[in-house]
Amino acid sequence: VTPAHVYVTSYETFRADFTENPQSPPRRRTWDVVILDEAQKIKNRDVEVSRKCKQLFRRRAWVLTGTPLENRVDDLASILEFVMPLKEGETPIRLSLGPSLRERHQELQLRRKKADVLPHLPPKIISQIVLPLDGSQLQSYERAEKEGIIQLRERGETVRIENVLELILKLKQICNFCPTTGQSVKLQDVSERLRTLESEGHRALIFSQFTDEKHGARAIVAKLKWVRPLLYTGDLSPSEKEATIREFKGNISHKALILSLRAGGQGLNLQDASYVFHFDRWWNPAVERQAEDRAHRLGQTFPVHVYRYVLEGTIEERIDNILREKQLLFDELVDDVSIDLKSLLSSEELFGLFGLKPPEHAKTPRHAEKSPTNFSEMSGIEFEEYVKRLLERKGWEVEATSPTRDGGVDLIARRHDEMGLESILYVQCKNYASPVGVDIVRELNGVLPKQSIGTRGVLVCPSGFTADAIAFAKDRGIALWDRQYLFEFLNG
Image (tube, rainbow, N blue to C red; front, side, top):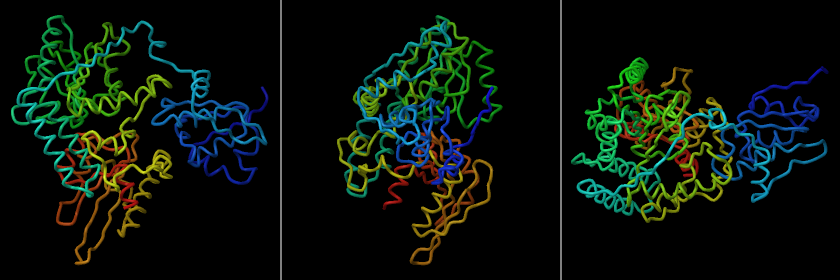
């Protein structure tokens, strides 16, 4: 075996090592093979690490990623550009979009699917259940939507995307249960199906993005007591969660397990159930697939039936139509990948859900996709520094706290107004790849000092927040800043 030159490094160190000097460690030879793990890091051609990786001289290049395409076809094109060899003296190529890109991808992709690894696993059968609203639930929904649209219009140029999202959240909750009578066409359908399943000896998992007693998992538990349901949500302690799963697995008299989507959607083995109900829908279908696969996994002996509810004529159906159109693009290129479809809904599409046009300040900037701010490239410390600089540019005096446990305050920002009154922000920064759940907001709320005039807790996450997190934060007066808010804050 001839001596091998091996260079193993992180993306962050690589960016520092790759300098203008041709003799810098990554650049001083032509590599036999360059392997990138988590290759979605180079999905954006314009970021530094992507440019530098593509300038490496290489005879072969391999990439490993679970998300070769997240938001745009350009993501896939950028990654495939790196897979091409690059000889000394050549310049990196730029692939064009179209049929040739699709053919190139099909030639190069090696994808291990569940069917390949578990060929004897029973099938997963997905059904979308479209139901009409009626009675008091229909009246509550129509009244809430009409009043919500009037309020959005009355705000005029001051209306924010946040106001639209709040209305969407409220309408989605009414789609689960009528706020005045508790009526639910979804629950009625679930109940009828559960009676049949119980008689046949089957058990079910029911997922909701909400956890509360009025619209979410706890409301479902209260209405289905006849099947002896168990509850699994993010606010349970680790020992309570473990006890719940143990009880469900060990006692078949519990015919249903009701789970919050974020807490129960991953890490659990629940092959004891062969039916899955999505009581309400999340923006990201990959999150739903993860949840379904708690039952559809090694050890399952029955076909897994998945039911996804959508109420016709409501915000659920309108969002579902938009997501279906966008899903087609991904299905044509990459099968069954994780896609954050929420990030693909422009402000025009969000306002358009209610027949409105966004004001000028809320319109999606044409250059937004090419924004130099790429949070996925930042470490946790770098993201804290970014938020700190952003606040300082807006006139805040910002103190970075010493490292604390998860749930602590990362930044304390102070500012005095013209009257000399002091405002204080206690800021926690979470640069997560997926929306922050209610458990994180609860933790922040627990460590905040006693609230007084001029003080407020702030949780920052570019990827956004779950519905439960938004509801809890609103009730506790905690501000939530997502990617859109950061952009508006920066340019406002």
